[in-house]
Image: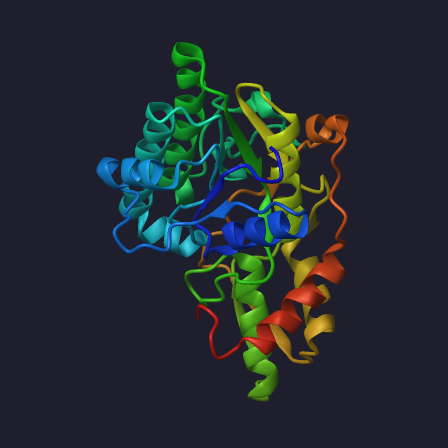
Length: 313
């Protein structure tokens, strides 16, 4: 991408999209495009084509999606698969129709089988049974990967697919039941601290192992891949390091300053027992995550406190 290239960020108000915009500005890109106009409903093919016609982007980051944590994925599975299939199908076809130079489709590490070998290599896709709690969302994202590959195969489109690990950071969703695990914990421990609660109840057993990537690192990596990667199939992006949810809780209690007890409610599902990405492919290309988990949680918590009145909660 040139510094004056027309770069469209779809989903620019969300966690990843807003970070991509910040990182593009930081790197000196001057023609950053977004869909502020309320006419645009990316679930509709006609709207996706209006976006491409009106804005004439050369490069597109597809970060628009319906996302949520394990509870939302499990209870709103129909909405998850419908909305995500509709958005990505409309946008991918519109990018082809209007001859976009390059599209980056943002997927998720949940596309991989529940019990595949660890760390998870890109070639493990479709090699085993899916995790049941997020299968609707995962199938939609798998369809996006395959669609990008098929458009590459038939039409020669330069469409790439990137699979991030669990993301967190500024502008996250901190809803107690609809968010991902790390922002949900920030909200729970903060509220418990300010309300002088003696205990906090958390879902599951705390035993699953998870990997976390700060969203600003992710955005930096996505721009790196837009400039340096042109292959079919998914490519992972993450830190390559994981920890148990119980270890995460102890770290977050220390950072937030909550001194009370944690009660684990094992009636709720744990999800996939371990999910650690193999990031050797992106590391070989020259990109590595920079933000430590402790530092990332600290800065995210400070942002959370500064924006508490306006956060998604």
